Image (tube, rainbow, N blue to C red; front, top):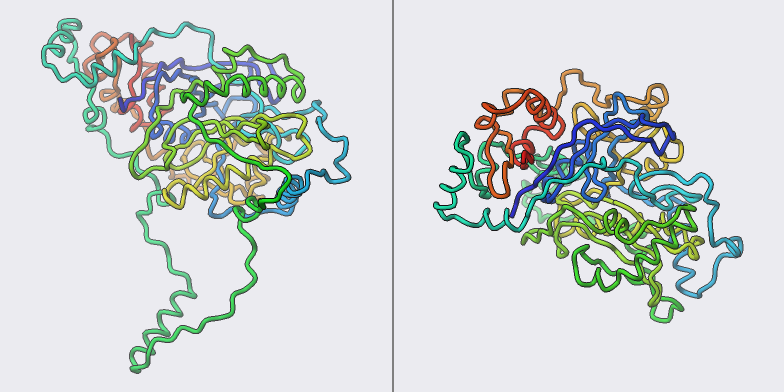
Length: 500
C-alpha cells in the first residue's frame, strides 16, 4: 500500500520547551496513520517534523522560538579538533579500559540546563543527549481507520466492489485507490540540482588543464603521459578514525541496526526501556514514561518499511541503532532512513558512560552511516539534525557541524549556515534566507489546485475534492486550503486527507 494517510488538525498552540512560555509555541499539526518514506522526505524538506505519529510544522512568523530545518551534507563534513578528541578518547577506552585522568569521577552530568530539542540535544558536551520535543499531539480522539481493510481494497480490482462503493456515496465520483491514480495529475516532486544529479558537475580548473595538455600531446603524436606526483600525507577519514579497533582491545563496541517493528525490537525491549528509564531519571531528572508512552514516542512510527532494489540494504523506514559495549547495551539512536537522508529522531544512553561524550560520538557515527549509505545510494547524502533554534542558546550547537545548511521558510531553498546568517538571526529571530525577492515556493498550492486534493471518505474509498466540494462546508474548504499550502501541491495531490 503505497499511500500516505493523514488527519489534519490545523493550528495548535502549546507550551514552549525552549523559552518556557505558555501557549506561545504556534504551528500546525496532523496525525499520520501511515506514510511512505518518500512523502516524509518531502515533508521535512518543507519544515515538517514527526514525533511518533504526530507531524508538526511551526509557524515561524508568529511562534516564540522559530524552528529552522537543518541538514549536514556529509560530503562536505570535516572533523574538528574536538571531534577527534572525543573519538580518540573512545578508542583509548576500548583499547585499555581506562579513562583519561581528568575524567575520573565524571559519570553523571549536571542536569541543570540541559537543552530541549529533538534529535541530538545538548547537555554539558558539544552535542550531547536529546530529550523529548515539547511539541506534542493535541488530545483528540483518532478516527478509526482500518489499514488492513484499506490495503485489501487497494489490491482488490473487482468491479462489483467499485459499484458498491458508488452506491454508498451516490453524489460523489468514487474511486478505488490504486498506485497510479493518486499521482497521475501531479508532476513529479523533483529534487533540485543538489540531489537529482540532473546538472553535470562543473569541471575543476585542474582537470581542464590536464585535458588540454593531453590534447596537445596527442596533436604532436606523442603518447599521453600523466605525471604522477608523490602522494601527500592525507588525513584519515571519519571512518578510519572511528574504526581503529584491534583484536586485542580490552573492550569491543558493536552496533545492531533493527527495524522498530521487528522481532529483534520486541526481544530487546526490556533492555532498551530499562536504559531509557535510567537515562530520563539521571540525566534529565524526569519521572520516566510508562512503557506504552515510550513506545508511542520512540517505537511507533507511521513510516512504512520500503526496500526498493536501488535503496540501502536496510531499506527505508524507522530504526533503532543499538550500541553494545561487549554484551551490555549502553546507548540507542533512533533514526529514520529516507530517500535523501538519515534523520536523527532521538538518542539516549547509560549515564554511567557519560565520560565518553556519547551524544557527540553517536552523531559522528550517524554521519559515517550516511557516508557509507551514499556509496551505494548516491542521493542519500544528508544528515538531518531536526531543528536549529537560534533564539535558544543551548540549541545553537547544531550549527557547529561543517557543511550545515538551513531551509528558507518561504522559498524552501537551502543556505549555508554562515556567520552572516547568524548575525541576521541575532538581529531578528525570523529570517527569510533567500535574498532573491522573486524566489517563491516551487510547490506553491493555490485555490485552483484544490480540485485534485485526495479525500478519504470511508475505510476503502477516496474522492477528489472536485467531487466533494458540492457538499463541502466553509470551514472544511478553509482547512483543506490551509493543508495544501502547508504540505505543498505535489503532496496535497498524493497523500490521502482523512474526511471520515
